[in-house]
Image (tube, rainbow, N blue to C red):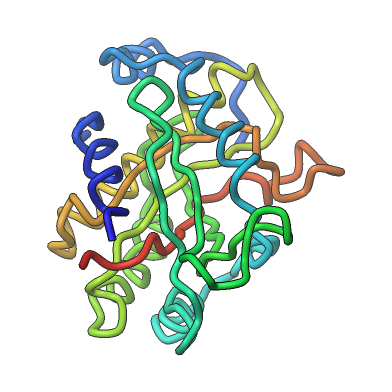
Length: 227
């Protein structure tokens, strides 16, 4: 399969690097590396069109390593989703199912193993708190396990609807990168296995409660294994 070739193109475009009402100049500088929130917004809209995260509608609280492995490991015999880049301009990902699998976006969309996690950051910042690092330690152990070590993952940052759209998009991107960098630095996970993207408030977990804390989350999605 050529699924990974498109994902690699997206990876090369990436650098390594509560409520939100005011903009910290440091955050703006950290984000100003040739990327704009408009481009990332297009990613979120593209993903909404092509991906139906039907197994990602709840927030997993304090999962164990075994819980995360079970939720992120594809079911035996299940068709594997194929993720293709929508182009460098949008940094988008399109989800397709293998030919003959019987699944398509018209039937409710492909389903990829996904988990939503509550990861704590400093107020108005992308700096992880001690509690946030502890939660990611469980994730790091799961992603390093024999069951998941061959898979690639999307690390998606999400916010609530408090604050401006542009700021939320930017903050979610930076938080996704912080999660990726922690996993790479602390658990030796290969950076190319993790794609960090921010979606701001475009994919609320609770759309009927746009300011609810559950909307502020990090979503981990299994992108499949390299051939």
